[in-house]
Image 1: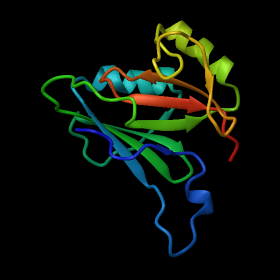
Image 2: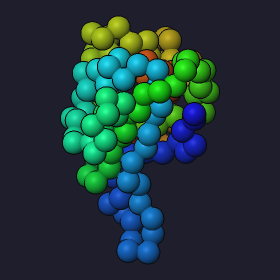
Image 3: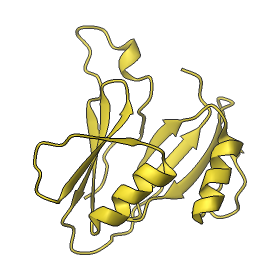
Amino acid sequence: MRILLAISLLGLAAGASAQQAHLNHLTVYGTDLQRASAFYHDVMGFDTIPEPFHDGRHTWFKVGPHQELHVVSGAKADEPHHVDVHMAFSVPDVPAFCKRLDKAGVAYGGWNATDKKPTVRPDGVLQIYFQDPDGYWIEVNNDKF
């Protein structure tokens, strides 16, 4: 299963009017719930929130004001994902976040995600790319919202 939209999660709802839809949650579907949950908690720094299923297949995380990431297990195998399909999160300090990735042994970098060098988008935002344990692509940037 692939994430269909590449979006910046943080700050999206802040600009939404009463008539405009806003992001509520994204879901990633993987093979190993413990592995993915540890990644999103320990590496990304997201706090878990209560999930209603209590079936051992779901972990929910708060990723922004009124915004969540749902991790669901049950996939039969890890599948390759293209970097063009990614989630994007903003942090105040990309180099400090890179140190967190280094400590966790996560490969990252520009579009190729292996050179450990942040790149600058055409709009001036510093960014890096890396993959979660199920191969979903993540962009972390310093966009101000």
